[in-house]
Image (cartoon, rainbow, N blue to C red; front, top):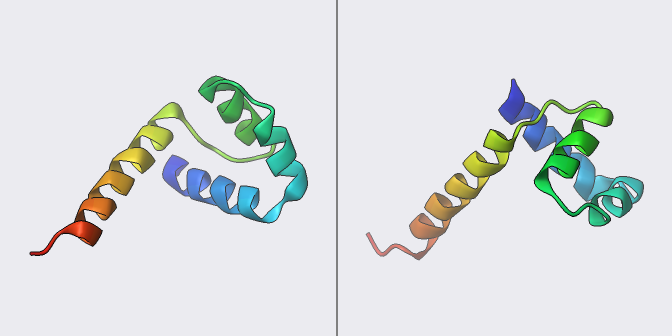
Length: 66
């Protein structure tokens, strides 16, 4: 599943200094996706969009006084 691949890629970025160095040199989303796929993670542009959307929702719940 692509969403799982995205989460795995994020965890790998957190743990791998070499992968972080490669990531920091990338200028486009397509380049990030290519790096992820080249290193064995199944990700898509939609995964990044979904993550941004989920982060907005989580942020709203954190700040909500409901």
